[in-house]
Image (tube, rainbow, N blue to C red):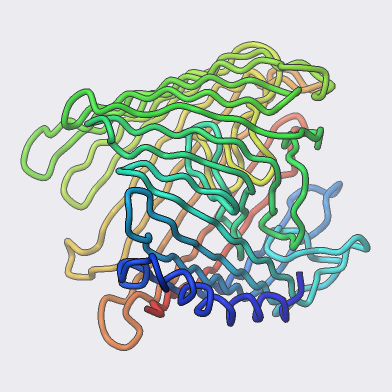
Length: 415
């Protein structure tokens, strides 16, 4: 999709809203509408530590994401429309050094000067239930969109959400049939992340129930047609221990299995994982553990992310049979009189990894984040984040690297 098409669609949006607001629509269609423009500047550098890998990868770009959401028309069933337009612009890169995923790359391996996409979503609401058709960015245990580069990924399909029509119960169900990758302008068929095996659709259903004020349980089912089935059980509890002291427990279980011949390889595994986080004033201390057993890697959609406690800055720790543990520390500098400044560091160690060429492999990752958000003035909300990664993999599982990301972001409310 060209930038001219995106501009035309954005210019047409106010007319679409005004048309929908005429006649049977209430003022809430406009009064409850909102729009924002997110600006994201991202520089990323990877320094590979093995002679078999390229020396470096380096990309720099500027992203623009416009989101517009209407309210709903009056009546028993309310109708509305949402829009999302994204534009990525290359600031600096070369065919030799590109490849971080920050920029779109053409079939010749050359980074594009710019790329863009437009997504529209029709929606209808009855009581606390909302049906959305079109562009979707779900955040669920069995399907999550990716937002870790210049632009975010998105899916096309339909999704029904019931937000506590039954007190304490949230339900989601839907079907996806296409994906727009974070570094692409096209809508493509869904595929399996590890080998690109394509599928006609992905179906999902499930929900979460508040058992107590601080305790919730969830179940979700996902099926990538003719490739894999996935069942998820989760339990989250936040336990207050004292003033400004609490313990959060996040337990997750996945059962994954083949669902046809499309994969070209076997998936039949169980994954148990959990994370404990102790919050003490400005400090957070976290510890996580995961155990995978069976055949195949942890499955998820290309263009998405796995719902894993060990989904960290670079690696997912989702290779077959991976046992992994994590230690994490967060600090909020507001307690020292510097509101908006935060620090995070974590270390993840994976072992017992099996691949077609390696048995009992090992890998580890160390991440450090330093972020600051301006608290007031004309630049209030402007945020700067530095991310540093060190990743090492034993027995040639993955290329060793040191990585730095510098991200500057600002979201401008339009109305």
